[in-house]
Image (cartoon, rainbow, N blue to C red; front, side, top):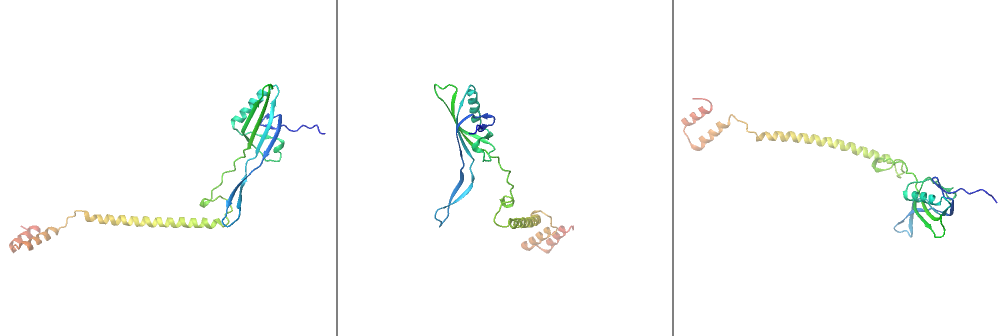
Length: 223
């Protein structure tokens, strides 16, 4: 029989000397999708959930109170910690977080504490996804040639620029026409206007030739 000691589970530099039970759980994240005309449901796998590890043990010894305090502080902090144990040997486990912790002390057993911990894997975030044109993800397999959509998008942008230039040309032309139309509102002096007005008066009043001659002479600068 081998006398080799088994590695002690560690949370950072805190040794859990007396672990009585360890359990590790793996769970897949699956969404059931109903499909018309299909008996049953399609199971879409969204990826593995975080590894969950449950530890149950005791803290005992002269420094039991100090170890209990250190473990309670780590559980209360919610910070990521390194974890090593035999039960996670085959797992690519980098960081864990203590998501639940229970501690128990019984009368007549000083310096002896029972505990139960639940640890969840806390994997590193992936690098930021690079957004491609049309809201896609660069490198993603869309099932068709995404370059075609890019060319269509560029063509639409070019046509939109041409349309914008045409609209600006029409707008400038309308501004010029509006400026010309505004000339009709100006009070410009017409040198023939007094003559035409006096001629109309002559026709309506039936004045004699002498009066007409004198009035025309006045209009034309005569005596």
